[in-house]
Length: 72
Image (tube, rainbow, N blue to C red; front, side, top):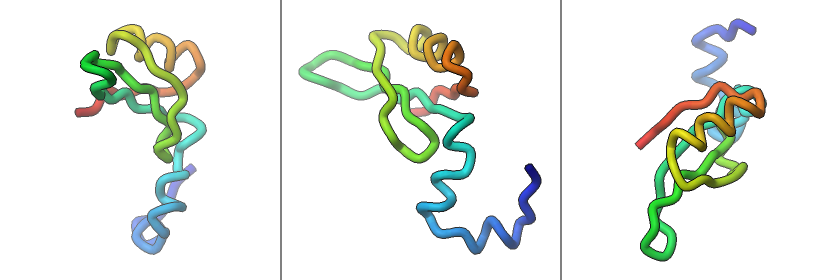
């Protein structure tokens, strides 16, 4: 689906967050009780799961038909 630049600039932050939320996920590290955990999040920020390593999180996201990205 193609979006024109003007349309994207007029979208609310909530609507922009939903853009691609059914297709994309991001992997982000966070600390939980002193351990580093890799969370799997939908594009809109909804937490989908967590894994013990970035590689495993990427594989799990991709196995569930998400285009997955590792972010800092």
